[in-house]
Image 1 (cartoon, rainbow, N blue to C red):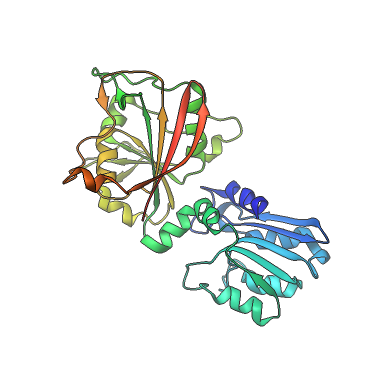
Image 2: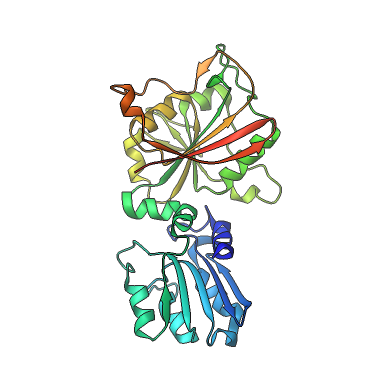
Amino acid sequence: MAAALALASRGGGTTGASPSVGCIIARDGRIVGRGWTQAGGRPHAEAMALAQAGAATRGATAWVTLEPCAHESPRGPACADSLVAAGVARVVIAAGDPDPRTDGKGIARLRDAGIEVTTGIRAAEAEAVMAGFFTRQRRQRPHITLKLAVSLDGSVALASGESRWITGPRARAHAHLERARCDMILVGRGTLVTDNPRLDVRLPGLADRSPQIAVMSATEVPDGARRIAGPADLAAVTDADLVLAEGGAGLAASLIAADLVDRLLLYRAPILLGGRPALAALGLPDLASAHGRWAAGPMLDLAPDRLETYTRIR
């Protein structure tokens, strides 16, 4: 399943409304097929892995990060039916599919065909890899990651507004990798006017993974950018499941105050600025209400900087 999850992560930001699924097919202790959801959502991971495995699927085990779909589509058959037709003996599934068109139906179809089904293997990791899809299904909005580059004292700029660069090359390169995994990048109008950021992906081989650009602004935005009037309007974004919000302090505070941030990336540099804080006032009624909201995740050494990750507890 770890290998299937790694394959699933390849499709982040490219599969549209479809989840980025990974699939491994193994027989007699040997991997015979690998697949992940392709750009635009088709072929599905199972279809790719089955095609690669060919006749070796008979009696094989399929490891899939998401319950195989059970609904027909003009773009391809249901994956549950394809696995049955291929003659697999066992299917191991990480997470169930919350889409009402499949929810439980894919598993039932496999079991009805006499296939052994095991579920819940590394489910939390699978939901994290497919966070955009699960947030869309459960909350009817995109999954939002807030990225902040801060000093040790939590500043995002000097008092003068100067902010290039707080973090070093390794941290900035990692931030570009995060951009490549998203459908949309969101900034505030103030950041756009002050910093004039390019908001693209500048990593070798990943330039074509630059996400669409959106600006949160009450007024017009430059050509080529999408206007988001306010946090509430993010629910109307139906063509992007993974949104990366990059700045500035006003945008960050508005998203957190609206409880729309699902994941937090803090790139922390070993410097002290005494400048502009990363967040504006959040309007918290008391200190107790700030606790119990965020769970610490992995930390990454990006010397001289450090990346801290947090997920919203819901």
